[in-house]
Length: 439
Image (tube, rainbow, N blue to C red; front, top):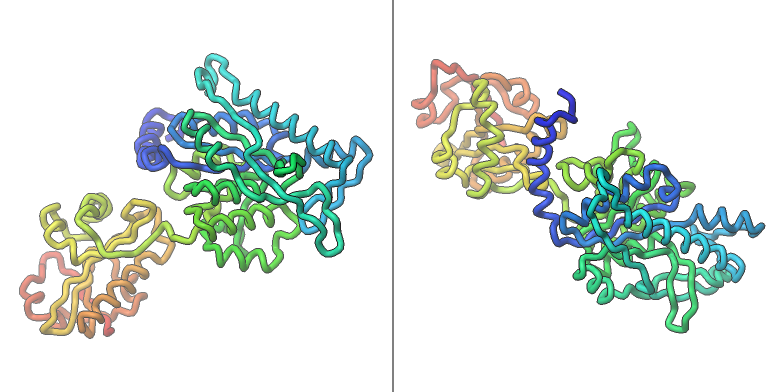
């Protein structure tokens, strides 16, 4: 079935509703790298940002300008000089910086003003507000280089930005900062974005660029990194000749200083912003201190998610059927893997203290997440719980998944290996195989 059919659109919309509710009223700082502002897909990106605004998200948009500044300076016969990813900006170069940034501001204001009938921006009425929100100071002389009119962020005018958000406006920050003495400084757009996200206590920092894709040695997308893992990648200098270095540094800085989640998105992926924010797995790399997938003991509010997970397996005979009432009464026996609010795996431990053993039951993993060792992680969690209860072994009864349990260290045994209370309940018609694992 095509993903554009009405049925699939309804399915997607229903599953996006938790994110719509979760994002409403939140503050997102979104940075568009300079190279994106010359791309024909820029209007589509603006449409997606307009959609976020219409859903009640408070947006701060930061734009880069590096390629446009370089082009202006080249046309003027001025050489671009960089040290440590920072442009050395003399008085002549500053004129080119102001011209490039000013032109980009006007371009973005025009795109946010679109309101043609039959377009995504129809009746949007979005006000894009720019101003002297970024207070800067000079970089000064470092390692013998005088950076002149290159600056760094001193502070962000948080109160002024919040006033604009309260009025329903989108705030635009450019890579230019003003000093208390009235001077202008060329500042790094990634620094503006990460500093603004930290100062505002933003829920998300989203950095978008061309080919902004982080992959492992097998070219698999790195979906989640801690700030420490991101720092190790930066220390290896894998990205020193690309924009990824600056953008990953900004994400790491934000995630280390109170921003819940920093996202790196490849703008070459159509709809990357929408996919990242309104689908469970997204399409980019998330840098966060807190994992968005956790293993924990189940709570009563998890019953619905467990039922939804196990019902297909009950229907095909893999699991014994359990009623909602039974689950509610036994919920303390269960552990789950939760991924961004969804139960994607579950298992239960039923102890037999007198026999020093316990039954592992109702092991289930969502079909979309069966290649990530989640079953093994749940098993390890319940093994720790069993040891804490003084149990010396686990047993399991299974009809279809014997091979997986053998891979986890279980060994085949007979029905007589079960504790007496469990033997009396053995279903001979189901004819389940018994496996035991010492702890």
